[in-house]
Length: 460
Image (cartoon, rainbow, N blue to C red):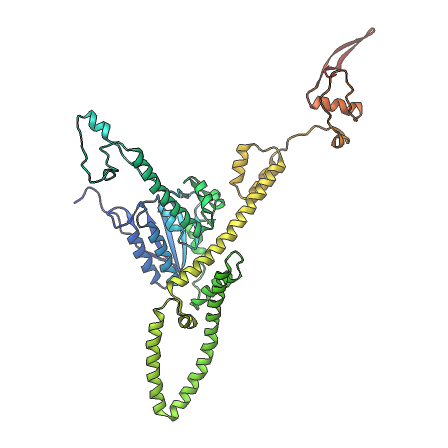
């Protein structure tokens, strides 16, 4: 018996019209006695895809894990759901960081609770140096290698500059792949992702950064699904995605033309199906009068079925497309592009909101840099409300002619001021600029003392 009890095996839950796949704890590539693994997650997703429920929910609470096998697992989860025609949603309850976030990007929609922590998009590794501890203990270790770099990573020796450069290049390469994977699924540029510096975000800040689509509880996600929809034609979603690609000006002309051809082939299948239905009825009538014709048609059907099976194995076979049968790979690429378009729209909306927030803050004129940073993390409607409550800086009243005043060059004390303002307004301007200061004191005028009379200090 071990010192620790084995963790409970994670199993899928059926809730209303969704199958829930729980992802919890540290992640590893292969099955482990205490970590969740990409292998086990993929197996649970495959089981979920075999269920009747039209939606699969990844319920995530994980700090992340190994990079080995991660990106293949994320792509595999998405391909499995696309092939099964399942809607894939990720919900974050506690943490969805690093490797866990990479898995979440496989989903069509990411929802997080307000206190959930998401992000940490990057790679980290540690290299331990125990050479000084061994030296202090009087232990000498000599590495005997067949190559100068064979001993890289051994803690018994200090890290060399060459070893550090090699590790850093490896980390940077893996991070670039991570950034690209997130960019493809979330519609955020790799520069924007890199600028996050692997930080973690919560609440509205995560939404504004594009890491999360919306905030909500797990129950709200279940409620948003509504009643289970009637099972329809799985090609409808693919057609919709094709139409979006064909009309997207940001796509290349080649991509749009391919989408139009595929859409025409799928639409042509419906017409052909109607014609085939008529011919089937005619064949049935002819078959009643001619048994031999019926036998011949059976043989032809058998041959057709054999041909269809061969054609289905070819991913880009136009006949297969015409019959409405699209390979999992093609369907995945089409749906992924459609999702990418949706992310682009969301990104533009976020940029417009950020631009408007910056404009409002600048127009207010009395917001500090620290407060500006805080306001930029808030929703636009909340920024408007907060700015409306904040007092604007007071401006000196310089009279109606202030807007037309021309400020001349520097001048000596005895030179004419050149001001075209009335004396009172010119005096007010000098006070506002700090050139004059008005005080109050006692002024003697003949036999009369004036208490609190204004006096001017400075000035000309």
